[in-house]
Image 1 (cartoon, rainbow, N blue to C red):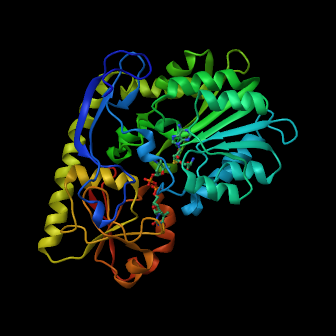
Image 2 (tube, rainbow, N blue to C red; image 1 turned 45 degrees about the horizontal axis):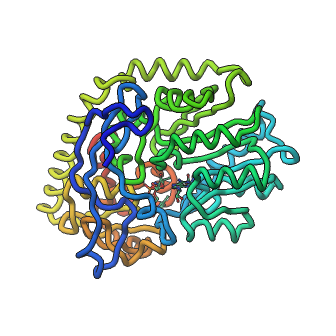
Image 3 (cartoon, protein in one colour; image 1 turned 60 degrees about the vertical axis):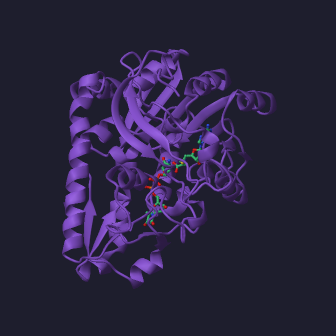
Length: 408
Ligand code: DWN
Ligand code: SAH
């Protein structure tokens, strides 16, 4: 139970209650239905630290373990994205150099980002608690510590290696409830001129696009420039740049460094001012969000019931973590969505968390094309549309809920 802000300790103001939710990546077999785990998923906001967060979160060991269901490299577009991320850092003014810089990635998963550094001969280390995905990275010759990032780990890094010149993370920092400890450890192990660069789903996009499915057990926080500035400032680390990314439905890349080492870029003020306009620096920014989520649920259930009454075949495309929030919050089961296809072997032949919709292979989708496919991986729309010309040509239609429920 955590009713107080994990950053500043002030009481959280409740923003929304999603009711009982299972683990976002808790794909399961039929024999485990009876003891499936659920938690009360409510989100709150701290007016002092500006941090948007889950009020309660399951124990990280329940979510990140030897059978973690998400493998980063399932998306080719994300592989390219991370290659470009690497190149941008190499070309930057921060002097990230193969012969001098030590690079540490927190939550490197199967190595999708840090591989670019290891392949180029950088001294590097990936820290990854989920053993199965960490093993994929190891096979790719990446140096891995199979652990959550915490105090012991940073002590080990300082003792066995050297101070860190580049701390990296992508879609990880927002997963860590003990983020204050993590930032404190980052500060201790960062070299004087070192930088911390990470990108995460952006609260501004979630509010603007009503992409409430970014809220699930793993995402204990949704960050903004305001909350990141507040958090890192506790440890005298300065927000020096922000760059918006289109990945994962709208993300923000944050750059931080020891105070007074680098010039603060104009982008920081621009984004902070924009956040003020969106009112996500105060509670009023969430008034509309609340109603928009409820409307989205009503609209979605109405459309799915209409399609069912018309005898249409409706399925889900990609068994994302995000889909767990939509399906459970909207109470959608296999009567409305017959199956969900996915390319990840560990998910296939299992059932979706909570609503128990069968997960099938991508081949099954090709062999049993539906009339309508709910695009659960809406964040990978371009990549998916590139390969689904045929489905479209045969008259197949898509359903999305972002930014509003529609068929297209
Ligand atoms: O933050 C997180 C992000 C980075 O990844 C984690 N907490 C968990 C995970 O979230 P997600 O499951 O919502 O991620 P994606 O990338 O939206 O979805 C990936 C799923 O989609 C995989 O199961 C693979 C599947 N997929 C597919 O079946 N066909 C993906 C693509 C691109 C495809 O063409
Ligand atoms: N960086 C990858 C993976 C994101 S999924 C990408 O962008 O695709 C989130 C990852 O964070 C998982 O692999 C999970 O095991 C890892 N993780 C969760 N808590 C962590 C912690 N405390 N320290 C390090 N990694 C963590």
